[in-house]
Length: 263
Length: 321
Image (cartoon, rainbow over all chains, first blue to last red; front, side):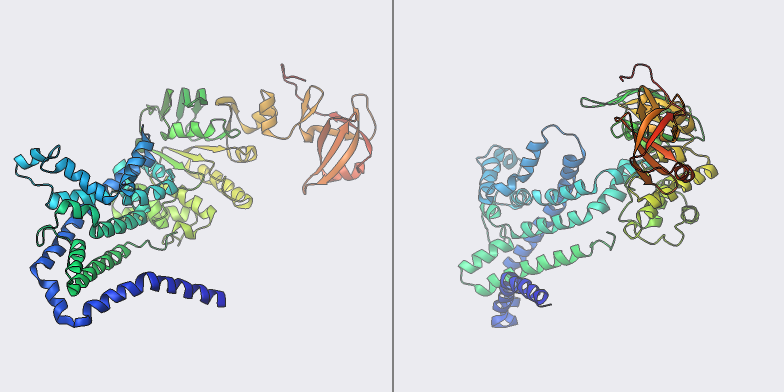
């Protein structure tokens, strides 16, 4: 009985120390000057733009990386591929490379003096110091999450259910939709949560390629850092709280996909 | 529907899973593919189902060439050893799967599912999830799912292998009855000769990727074509060059000219029969199977000298002595 309570207390204390207290402090600090300043720093055009940009990047990146991650996972687990080990290492590359290097590499490739830079600039597209570059950087750093979550689940469910579906007449797209997808659903959900978190939270790579132009290429994360350095703590805390709320909403939405009691 | 397999070869890397296998399964029959593990029996079944493709050779189902058809188009039902239940679907949805794929009207699907659940004695369990069923129930659900699409042939891969002995014997009898009612051509894989003898009309015995012998269970048991078949189909003793089943070992208290001297080593009560282990000429142990009355009449106990004689024995040419 006591060990049970003790364990529970230890777990809660740990959570409190790492999560609840810091987030609580952000909340407390944000509202320390009352609601007025918070509302103001929430609604200044630069803040609105930062929120929009953050969401825009996430809305582009998360679906793309989800589709890519699922496809990669199926290729890795279900198909015979030459060079599988290499592919697996490549998927993990973003985990290994520092985000700042990622940003720098993108500038080398797509920047004005980069390999493809003039190609795009000549046609009127600016990649670096604008949204496309930030999307690319975010895509790169959040690439592995879905694949890494889905691969072990695919391995674990095995191929028998898919073979059974085939013998029952299901074509491969029907098998995927009716059998495979529901079975790996929970892996995808975790992957999406992690991808979203990384997308809205990425600092290094985005900082390098964005140029951090206030009101144009500044995301919420960049804004937190900027306003903190400017000693506008209310603005910094407000932006931080916005990020926390986006994260919580994502978690809540993903929980709607919680598996039924089917195991 | 008849199944014809012609000169099929299948390799996995260096391992020869099927070595020039040809097989005729007559329509409406219940055939058991029997053999030790690694003998190729499951591979043969999966080649028939289209879950594996043969390296060489042809497969015909109902007279139609099926060698290159994907499993979706072979009109088969397949039952897996570990059920392959769709875990995220209810029992009813599992059974309905093939019908929903075929876009049958909802009412028809509902009626058919109820019918099938009744057939496999799972009435009222349609709303459960597979995890809430016992192993035997799950396998019956898998069978209902396979039967739902009215397959031309029913293929079962070690269907009772993961179940405990009592459930297994219930399901064997039940599969036999079901087959007699439905008359769908059925092929099942097993490594258990008793299961094959109990369920199948025809046994196809395989070893090392080849078919060793096929025929009615009694034929294989009474007229084995080789030592392997003799050994695989039941317990066997070796006395000199002769192979003798335990129930064909006669034990006497007096010699009669054709008997050999032996000593009783153990007497085991197996329930419906008595097993007596004797050593012949101080060597080779021989098992004999006696009825309880016989054993009592002879008054057998360890250490007692007796005389044994095979009442029926077989020898195989070319077997090393």
